[in-house]
Length: 252
Image 1 (cartoon, one colour):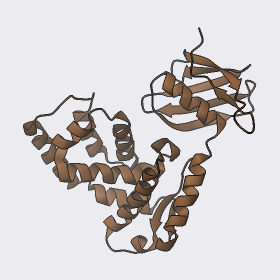
Image 2 (cartoon, rainbow, N blue to C red; image 1 turned 180 degrees about the vertical axis):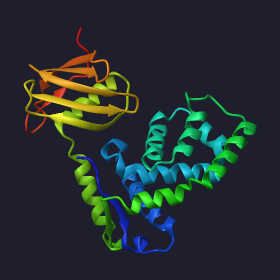
Image 3 (tube, rainbow, N blue to C red; image 1 turned 180 degrees about the horizontal axis):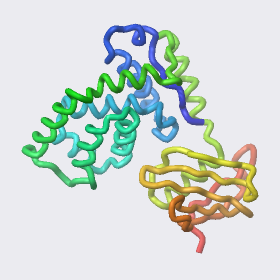
């Protein structure tokens, strides 16, 4: 089950300091990350504020020179930052990021990074990320305002929910490993279609769907409808309820 609520404390919600509300949510997400909960266990909206704050903090304190050198190979982080900028409608900041990362650069000069830093701060005058982040966060329908003393209880509940991974998600993640992509989220699904199981999902690079029939799971590209890979399901007797799990092997 994905973590869907956006948690902040009562104190931060009533604070006059907008950053305090953002920090409260960032702290909550950070606590879950510290318990080895990965991004794919969250709904994408539950990570938006966190990644806006993450990006803003890195650029403000280290500039693009450090950011590029630190994250040049972290496509997943760049995906979530892009998605978050798009979600809060920060088009100028997104355009700047895409100017720097049309592909993953191997390095960036300090002179070039200074120019990007200046552009970032200029954009901040019109598209202030703190303001946009706060406005998006405080108006979100799934914002959950909890007393500070209850935060630990909510973290424990989310840890329990995150461990309850449905069978189809396990299968999809195994397929993602085969095609070397990072799973993001289920986008649609139907357990009861004529093929028994059909699920649509997204990765950081593309959209796919799977169809399960006669213990064979086939992966298709959502846009081209072409088959990408497939694998056979077998009964795993080590699991209490004898659910089928996916073999990490492509079929000829």
